[in-house]
Structures are given as C-alpha cells and as structure tokens.
Image (cartoon, rainbow, N blue to C red; front, side, top):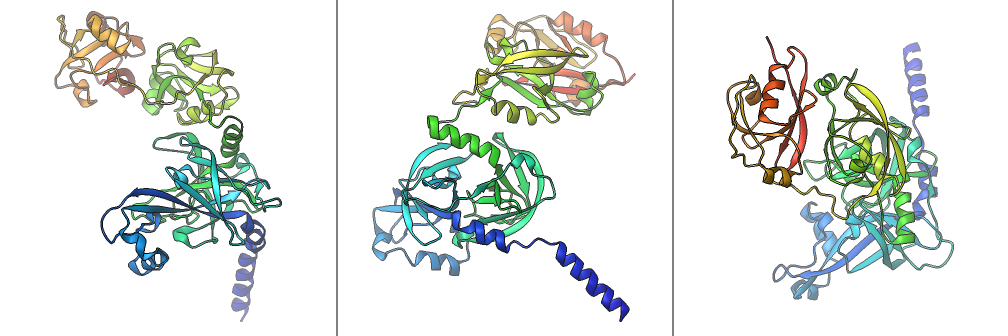
Length: 465
C-alpha cells in the first residue's frame, strides 16, 4: 500500500513538471495560416489531374481524399495546376505573412487561408532563397491576429518548443518537443545557423512557427532530415533573429544583402591544430582567398586560423559564415587570427556577398614542365608553368607529377594536385619542396596545402623515423 501511494505521488509530481500547452495553442493558433499555391505547368498525360507535391507520399486512401476536390474537367486539360501546401504566420496587423521560400517558389498564384476560414490571395513582397524565407502581403482589413516575437538567441538546448502547422494538409496540427542543438549548418545552407529540434515536422509544416513556452515565435520550421520522406526525429528551424533581419531588408529593399569575406575555409581538426600551434581544435582555417576580395584587401593570408570575429569566438568553421553573413557590407570588423604560431589582430572591411557565391574552379593543373624531383614523401613534383600560375592565380607552388608508395599516396595525393605550402612554409620551387621535405619533423602533425581542380584545402600527415 505504501509503495502504491509512493508511485502515485511520483507520477503526480512527474506529470506536474510536464508543460501544459493548451493556453499557448489557444492564444497563438489564430495567427497561424495555411498557404497554398497554383502554378500552371504542362500536363503529364491524359486523365492526370493536378497533383499536390507534398501529398504524393500519402497512402492512396488519403491522397484520393485530397484529390476529390479537383474538378473532373481539369484532369484532361492541356495545362494542369500544381498545388503546394505549406504553413505561415501573420507578423503584423496590416497583413504581412512570413513563410518559407520553397513553399511559394515558382507560384503563379498564392493563397492564404486564415483561422476564420477566409481565403485571400497574397502578393509576394520578396523572397530570399539563401535563407529560404518569403514575405507575403494580404489585404484583410485591420486587427488581424499576430504572433508575438521572441529571441532565438535566448533559446537553450533542452528547452521545450512547440510547432503549429499543416502537415500533409491537416491544418492546425500541434506538435511539441525540445531544442536538440543550436547553430547547426546544413549542406548548401552556409548562412543560416539552424535550430535543431525533435518536434515532429512533416511536409506541410514548412514555413510554420516554432514557439517557446512563453508563446513567442523563436523559429520558422524549414527542413527535416529523413530517409523515408517523413519525420525521423531531426527537424530544423530558421532562427527568428535571422528571419526578422531578412524581413526588414525585404520590406525596405526587396532583397537581402549579406556580408562576405571572400575566403574558402575548412574545419580545424586535432592534427591541423597541432601543426598550426593551437592548444586545441578551434577556429576556421583559411585555405583559399579570392583575389581582391575583402579578406585579401584586409590582410588575411592562406594558413591563417580565424579565432574571433569582433566579440564572437569562432569555435567551429561554420560559425564564421554565420557571423559574417549577419554583418552589413561596408562594416569594419576586427579579427583575431593565429599566424605562424602567434595571435594577430586584423581589421577587415566586410564586402557584399555576390549573387552567385559559388567558387569558380580555376581548373586542375596539367603538369608538363621539366625539373622533376624525388623526395621522402614518395612524390615526383614539377615546376608550375606561367600559364598554370595565372590560371590558378598563384605566385608559388609545385605540381605533383607522380605519386609513388609512401606518405603522399597514403594521404590521397594525385597527379595534377598543386602543393603550395608544406609545414606552414610556402613552396617556391621543386628544389624548395625538396629542401622542406628533407627537414620535416617526425612524430608530429605536418600540414600541407593542396589545390585540386581549383579548390584549396589543408591535409595533415605524420612521418615516422
């Protein structure tokens, strides 16, 4: 009996610690909207009506339910109207609505359905594909319900959060979970420090709000990691601090301008940290610098490890693009770098991120010059021709002509690779490479800067006795 009472008391205490979301949902739901789009696209064949991309993975019985509303006549029309379903939320009483860019991208018409069942056509104020945000405007009169904005910077890992959206078209679905991590970088998403959660997010939740327990929006649900097409416990939201900066720029300029350094960076692992004289892995290693870019003009050098930007520590290399992207072009920023084993301060004027920030590959070197030399790394290297130096924008370095058995082969070097730095020293010629290779230390990390197909990176290796 005593044990039973104790278990009952324990269960009651545990239940009391769990959050009650009912008031939050009641207050916040009216400002959440459902977004649908129409786009005229060529018909895929007779008898095929408009499809709903976000619903194609549904079981046939559910897909049939959603397709019943499509008029029969439209199923054989020469043009079909593709529909997309997503979520959004109202951020101002005069009708501004925030959602994901991928929800409305390419749409000919955008419709916003309010909580009172009104459906209004929306105009696209502006979109920013890099952050996957779009700002819409609807004309629904005054006194629209709006969300309250929080600060994503105040979020803590383990904190409860809640999402409201339209997964698979089921409007005003509520899911809850916790913040799993902050500042996540995703492939091809260098400028957004995503909030990772375990909140159940599925197709149709895109663009919907992520709330904290105060009922404040702290993020915009944007992506999921999945192998099945559905929720697998990894969801990613755009921090509201980033989103509102984008909103203000879209309102005022119709476009977003981000800061840019003009450098290619890589992560500093344990071996690289040792080779550059760092006590532990930290910072962003500068592997390549765009000629006449902001970093080049500000005095950054290949091999610098950026440890701090203004007052922000750069712990992971992904921290740097997040921090730089938030700065306005023309801003003067201070940097702390590790160079040659010593910490130095630099001042750099931040540039504007180009429309296309993909690096142009300068092409791989085709070494054909004489003066080959052998060395303890098992490499045969040759001088770079003037044409190769111009193509790669280099004033020093050697090209790998042949890779034999040895350390060079073990670290994956290939013929055609260009080596510009070895053991933190610039390589001026094949003879210089031979000299530096003879003096390499044993039983410690050694760094080498390699350019392959126009892209530079640092690799490390060790030599034994």
